[in-house]
Image (tube, rainbow, N blue to C red; front, side, top):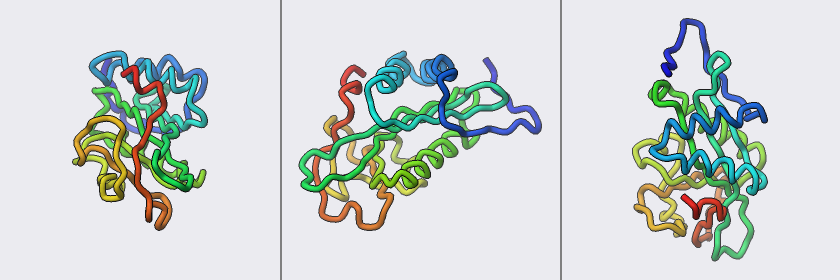
Length: 178
């Protein structure tokens, strides 16, 4: 299925609607090697609360998706409001057109508006720093999964929210099935 952009056809980023569920599953299934991420989105939608879910739509077609769900910082005395960015998917034919960037910016804006302290992501170290993400290990924050240090990143959303914190990020239990 080709997603070539027609002249004048712009990409709209918006919150997901109930009617988007099947299209979101399809975008994730087509973007990743297995159906695991698509199934993860459905599981998180049912059990993670609150969650933020955005779609990229061109014409009437959903071509991208971003999900943010709460994560816990285990080992931290004070409570911080943290979100995990995962998964993010853009149909292969629509990649490298800035759609992922638009989705991430919408997610960051929403998290700031809702007064979250930070967002964590396990992703490409060459991609996420352009949005302000840095290795979480700089704050003595690590993933509960064995992952490369430079691939587990965090974005502070308020000044000094990560001062004097440390610990292990625990994702929702639905991630264990990946």
